[in-house]
Image 1 (cartoon, rainbow, N blue to C red):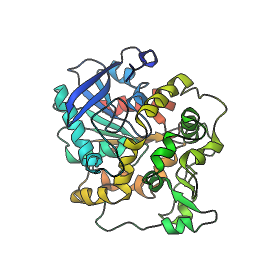
Image 2: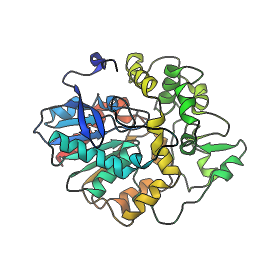
Image 3: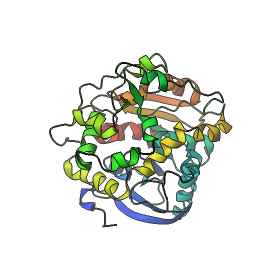
Image 4: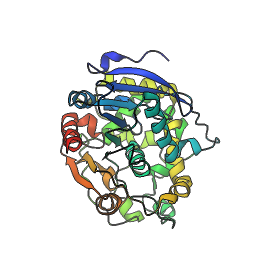
Length: 362
């Protein structure tokens, strides 16, 4: 690997590799002094620890030791393998929680003041708090609501009904679990830079079509109301689905130079590592593993932050309400930030940092 371009990191952020972490060598960004109350920030897909760069300085200035790892399957963290026919067990949420415990142990940290997760990192943060509340003493979930452990009964299969719609559709998570999805995203016809620029734009507040509302249920007609990046045209790849929505230029919240960090990392690693978690979710591996915790709730203080223009909070109907009333016993507030879509901590970092500081000090 070539060295990370640290010129794009705000002053005070540090980068290093932590070896011996549950079989991984974990790349982390850090801010603030060790020995202070620790915060663990978990990124989403297709992102990296780099996605936290804009909020880390403010949290460090508030007196915290802030740690953001590249998760298993991502970025500069090594020691993982993501072949399509390899076992999925390393990518189960319980093992990703084990990664975080091993990372804290390697850093000499017995417990964190809070774990914060965005997108894919949000359910991982939730499982951290649910399974080990003694270690993860608060939890802030972002952009992906946590509905609690899965019920033992199987959820309704709507995929045949989606395919029968006019025009026919498919759910992105099941596309991400297909054998060919990684290669299609690794080598998009428009080029990786243009693909990721379109993908990030399409899910941001910059795209005017992001005006989310609550869906009435997990049915094909309701799911078809979601944008193409969630419920895709049946025959499209993800690069094809987002291509019509490519912006004319860079975004103020994600410059071409910043985007080049993501492009460079995903060009080197590919997307397969990140896609393994979708295979765990859609193929039943998660449900089989996580049903062990059925009936348990998050008992530590919890909050939820998302962009007001983020469809992600409604992609699983009922999850947002269930998180507030059932999944968390000490829910401290729901915050939807104007002017932000799915990439809330990059689109509106100052507001996110302020909300986190208030929650952490409460």
